[in-house]
Image (tube, rainbow over all chains, first blue to last red; front, side):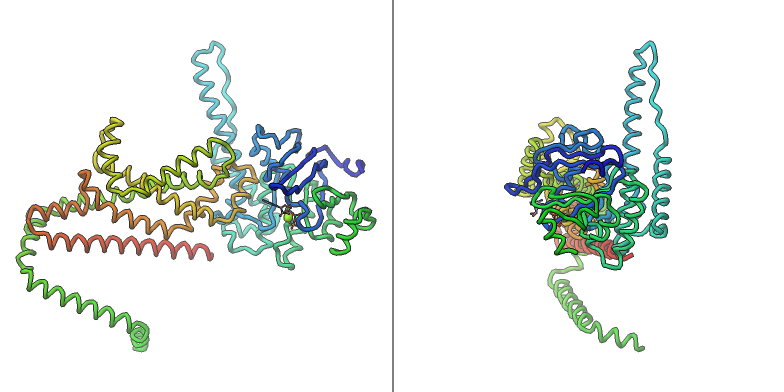
Length: 284
Length: 269
Ligand SMILES: Nc1ncnc2c1ncn2[C@@H]1O[C@H](COP(=O)(O)OP(=O)(O)OP(=O)(O)O)[C@@H](O)[C@H]1O
Ligand SMILES: [Mg+2]
C-alpha cells in the first residue's frame, strides 16, 4: 500500500481523525497520509462523510479529536494560527462561492493582496518599535526590509490574476461580476482564485456536481492540467471516469472510515470490500 | 397625438384621483381662508418669518435636523453592524458570550424606552456625570446614533443572515480572518440587501428629530414653535411645518427608490 504513496514528501497526515455532529459519529479515527504532487480522489455513498473529511483537512470543520498535520504543523491545535495555514490550502466548492459583491479580478486578488499587505504592515509596525528602541541603543539595530510598496503589491497581484485568467481564456471577464458568468466559468475562476495564493494543495468538494453537463468538461480539463503540472489535489467526486483517469489514488469512504484504497485499477477493476463492490455496481 | 391618447388611457384613474384631491384641497383652503381670517394670519406669519427674519432660525433648524439625522444614521450603521456581527458569531468562547449578553441588553434598552427619555437622561444626567460638556446638537447626534444603532442592528442581522453562508466560508477558506471577511465580503452584500429598510430607518430618524427641542437643540419643529409662540399665531407655522416634513420625507423616499433601481441594474450587468 505504501509504495504508491511515495510520489513526494509527506504533506498532510490525519491521525485518529474523529468528527461527531452531536451524537452522530461521522468520521471514526481516520489515519491517512497525502503526499506532495499526488492527485487523490475520494469516493463513497452520499452521507458517508466525504465532505466532512475534506473540510477537516483545512479545519473548516474542527475535528472532535485527533490530529491533522499539515506541512509539519498540527492545524487541529487551537493555538495554531489557522488563517496562515489556510493560505497554503486552496479550496474549491460545489457552489463556486465567488464573492458576489466583487468583480472577477477582485475575487482573485482579494486574498493575495490581503496577505501581502498584512505582512508589510507587520514589518512597518516592527520598524517603528526598532526605531524607538534604537534611541536607547548604542549599536543601532537595522530596520527590516519592507519590500514592495502597497501599490506595487496591487500591481503584482493583478498581473498574476491576469496571467491566470489568460490561462483559462477569460481575460475579458476581469471586470464583470460573477452573476453574469456561466457555471463553468464561475468554477474555473474559483479554481484560479485558489491558485492565486500559490497553495501547496487544493481541496475540491464535488466541483462539477452543480454544473450543467455541457460545462463539466471544461472544469475537469482545467483540473487535469493542474494535476499534470504536479499540483497536489484532493478531490471528492462523483465523476468516476474522471477519478479513474486523473487520480493516482482512490479512497473509498464509507460509514466514517476509509474502507478501501488503491490505484484506480485496483479500486475500480479489482475491488475487495463488499461495500465498495456494491457502491461501484450502483454508480458505474 | 396617439402617444397622448394612450397616456390618458393608461393613467385616467390617477388623473381623476389627482383632480379630486386638488379640488378637495382647494375647497378646504377656501373655507379655512374665509372662516379663519387667513389674510390676517398670513400677514402675521410674513411679518415674523420674513421681515423679522424668522427664516434664519428655520435654516439653522433644518441644518441641525440634517446633521442629527445623517450623523445619527452613520453612527447607527457602524454600531448596528458591530452588534449584528457580535450576534451572528457562533458563541464559541466566554468573551463572545458576554459580549452577546451586553449587546442584547443594549438593544433592549434603546428599543424599550422612548427617544425623548433617552435624550433627557443622556443630556441632563449621563453627560454631566461623565463631566462632558457638549452642545445640545452634539448630544443629540450621539444619542440618536446610539439609538438607531440598536434598531439598525436588528435590520443588519437580517441582512447578514440573508447572505449565502458559502460567501463567508469561501473567504475563511483562503485564510482571511473573520473580521476582514465580514468587512469585505459579507457586510457589503448585507447592506445592499437591506438598503430599502435602511432608507425607512432614515426617514423614521428624520421624523424623530422633532423631539430634540427638549434638550434645547434648534431643529425644524423648534423653529416653527418659536415662531408660533412669539407671534401668538400657530396655524400657519404648524401647517408649513407639516408640509415641510412631508416634502423632506418624500424626497428621501424618492432617493432611496432611485438608489435601489440603480443597484438592481448593476446586478444585471
Ligand atoms: N453541520 C452539520 N451538522 C450536523 N450534521 C451534519 C453536518 N454536516 C454534515 N452532517 C451529517 O454528517 C454526515 C456526513 O455528511 P457529509 O456532508 O460529510 O457527507 P458526504 O459524504 O459529503 O455526502 P454527499 O455525497 O451527499 O455530499 C451526514 O449524515 C450529514 O447529515
Ligand atoms: Mg458532500
